[in-house]
Image (cartoon, rainbow, N blue to C red; front, side):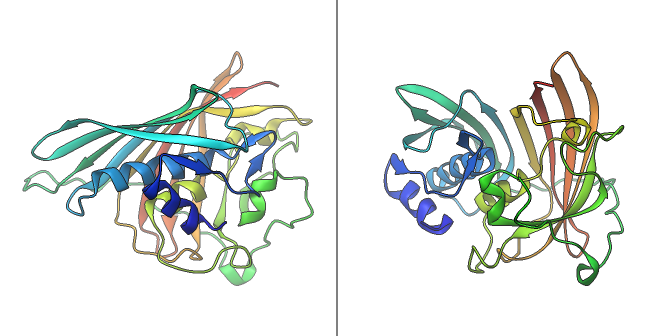
Length: 264
């Protein structure tokens, strides 16, 4: 089942079948879960004039490779902003929750453009794409990643964080117009910044993930994006980090902040 078919299923029914090939350890890849939740939100709002401003996701429990129910409730529909909550259910329990804010444009005298400058990465013809034979989770095969700074996970690095190029692998996903659901799925493929400090395999998972959307998404599914993550603080089994995603033309597309549980 392709992502497009999965998203069509979400539009047509509360109950969905999660496709194969998206495991991250024993659970479903969090990026796919986020993509499903935001697609349900967009389909429920169904208003082209209301653009997605931000969303916040809490990964309550593990999502299994099984049937799931995705429900949506509009919490408030104001003149400019609509707020919606989406839940993913399995085994009669909520496993993931998304709250998203959609807004229509308004006239304003306030304009600030202080977004961080995109990093100067090696050109795409000079990058080294992560080989498929490395022991990455199953879900990573859906993407192409190329580290440009920092170290791979579990490399016993003295410092956290990294940056690199990323996109959906054209061998796995036919090119088409990219959606916000695709973007969230792609953005979450990068591991937490502290994973490069691990000396051996150990669990780590996102607890909360907040994403703010900046420039409009006008890209193909197979387009390349730049990603950079920075850890703010890590202690007592939790880490806090923020990350940026730019397109190939150095336009800032999204800013993310997440809290990560660390078992190392």
